[in-house]
Amino acid sequence: AKDPVRVLVTGAAGQIGYALVPMIARGIMLGPDQPVILHMLDIAPAAEALNGVKMELVDAAFPLLKGVVATTDAVEACTGVNVAVMVGGFPRKEGMERKDVMSKNVSIYKSQASALEKYAAPNCKVLVVANPANTNALILKEFAPSIPEKNITCLTRLDHNRALGQISEKLNVQVSDVKNVIIWGNHSSTQYPDVTHATVGDKPVPELIKDDEWLKSGFISTVQQRGAAIIKARKLSSALSAASSACDHIRDWVCGTPEGTWVSMGVYSDGSYNVPAGLIYSFPVTCRNGEWSIVQGLSIDEFSRKKLDLTAEELTEEKALAYSCLS
Ligand code: NAI
Image (cartoon, rainbow, N blue to C red; front, side, top):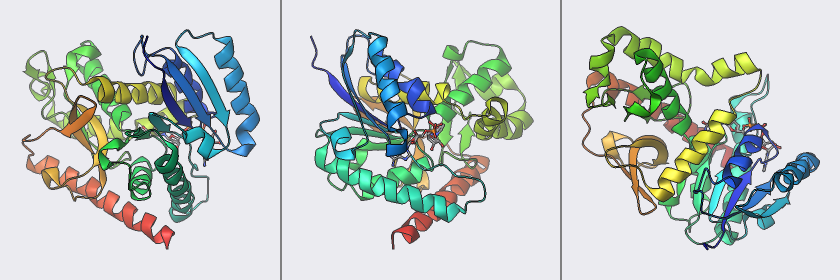
């Protein structure tokens, strides 16, 4: 039998946490034959709720679940973890300035970076979900210099999956038949959902849709605004789709992407596609042997170029704001 993999979920007493931990315990993230030990971290005010989640995990009697650590101590939570899914963060509350929210998250990600760097297993893979996801991941990278930058990513797979869903509904085809959409840039409303290279079967999506106007406006804004639409409908933010997409992200990263398919991941930019190096930016990637690589050589038309640059500008500005919170 395989040795258990230790998976950290921060913010585990929250909404996404509640949807995510049973998925991990059922093998959706790491596969149906991979035992897991869950490490759940939350803050002191949520300690009782966190313990309730632990009780439910025991009650669910998951065969793959070999242990549960539920704690408010970051060191205990991070010790020996192989995968870290960072869902905990400080949400924007009404009337708060952007800088104040950024400042709270910068200090959370700075201190959790240090705990991970010191106590996580070597080669731990990190996925940041909490917003501002790209910039939180960047701060985590800066303050965990001994964790290879390739190991620090953020979630844009939910946006990617939302784009697949929209195309599948528009064309009335199975979502599993839609391939190779791309989310470029920030997990925010400036992200660029791009179908230029997407296919259904072997046909290009733009040719099948035959509605350039929709692809260039309605489709893009629907995907960009989907999070807000879910909040409006549910009065709570997307949790099941976020949790499911986080599982997709880690599974593809660890187990590899299918031949001929790419996915979107927020990763440390090396300057590919003239995106400034040193940002965590969402790119199309393929994964193999536990490593992602950015898909190279895709053509970028003038419309796309502007969108790639716009979301990069926002990330550059966020990075500056984050740094100003440090000093
Ligand atoms: P939530 O508010 O229900 O849960 C967040 C949890 O984090 C709470 O239990 C809170 O106590 C905990 N927390 C706060 N500070 C912490 C710290 N320093 N250490 C550990 N835990 C801490 O929020 P929800 O709905 O679960 O969302 C979590 C985050 O994910 C939010 O930032 C949200 O904006 C983001 N998100 C990102 C998505 C993406 O695609 N990247 C999609 C949906 C949400």
